[in-house]
Image 1 (cartoon, rainbow, N blue to C red):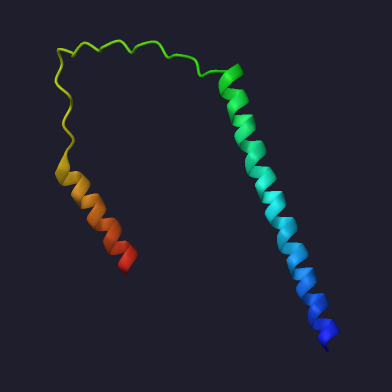
Image 2 (cartoon, one colour):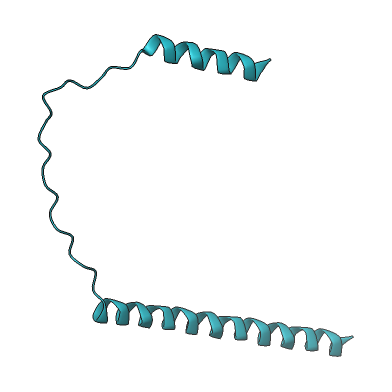
Amino acid sequence: MDSLISEGLSLMVFGMGFVFVFLTLLVGMTMTMSKFVVKFAPEPVAPPARARRPSAEPVAKTNNDEVVAVITAAVHKYRS
């Protein structure tokens, strides 16, 4: 019985150690690749956006009564 428990514990320690080492290497390689990408391929600078001129025409207003009626009908249909 002790042999089985000791084998289980050693297998657990080996497995957890392997996962820890793998994840540590994965994080290290990801950080290294990130530094290389920033160094060799910097983000392009976006040109400044041009300001829009306000139009002379007013923005069309929506008919709120119609929207409310459509939403009310949809909710009524959904609930029934």
